[in-house]
Image (tube, rainbow, N blue to C red; front, side, top):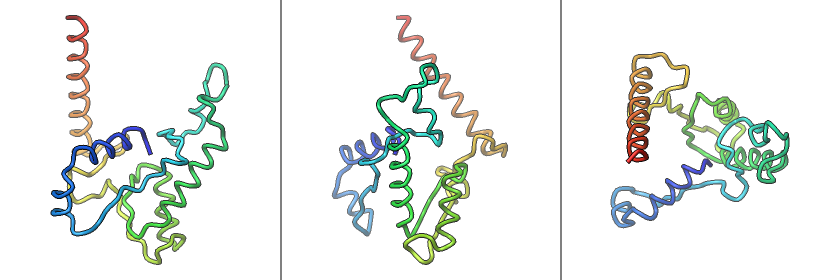
Length: 158
């Protein structure tokens, strides 16, 4: 998992009223994460764990750590009956192919790409997405980034 996902998980548990959640959700829930073996590279590029100048591994993370992280994450994801994925990611596309071919624990996995989510709030756009919706979302994100950058610059200059 990325550091931001783990922070969000922690914030959710720290800031949520358990009774309110129980009244909304008709089932017990838990967040399943791979904190024990995930090296949290946050990318699909294992070479990013190496310093490009010195060619030495960063933070003592070896290729073995990265492979263990990937294999344990794959095993965890193959156990699901329902899967929601980011289909801009080749890893998620491969995972969906495995699951739909019967390689997972569930005989009939149900998968959904976030790019096809019915609710526009949760619908993702790939970096190369050129639809009107994706262009508008990218413009809104850039506008917010500029606003935050300007606020940060103004605060620094005071």
